[in-house]
Image 1 (tube, each protein chain N blue to C red):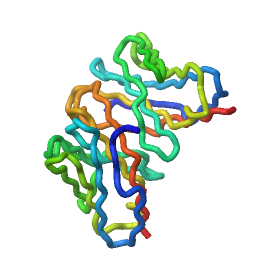
Image 2: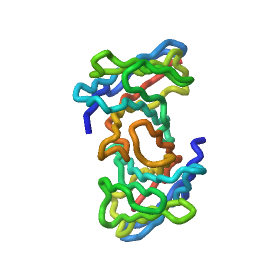
Image 3: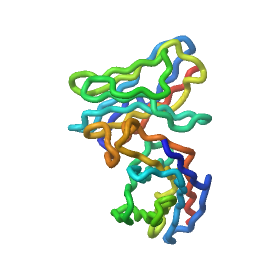
Image 4: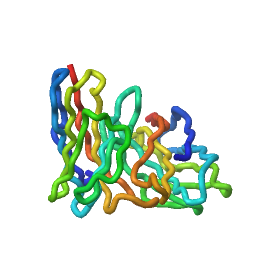
Length: 112
Length: 115
């Protein structure tokens, strides 16, 4: 599986935007970029995914670099409930498409 | 609420014992995945079942086994338990069980403590 690199931790203030970076320099052309997050004492939950174009949903936006070697998850207005570990994961349609390979993720702290 | 349920929420047992963790997937989902989350290893994929058949195996120990029943619920059996098996065990489900865009929905987990 192609590897992703994320900062161990980030801090934000409530109601401010948060940009969570992810590097994936070995991404292949068929890899989709997925983001999941894990709130304290809960299971991971899906946030967003994309291939090449920027994506928006009710939770967040995903900005993908033109060369696809990096991406950024954007929370437009962080709330205390967004404090979680955020995982950037690559997934493709190849032989290992069945699982999610979690790295260490980024621990986001949101200050009131 | 993801729609995936897991029981029990907590389990405390002794070394050498055997336990069974249960998972009910979201309605309509055919695939079930099991993951283990420990402090030192993070979230690791264990095994996947699709419509009753084993589809993929990850880092699952031989002491562990799983099955998926005709009603699509799944059970993870852990035997000859060791202290190092203490972890959170998550079940996830998805509609089909593959593909680059498919989302997995996770349950709340079972926290296992082996004393």
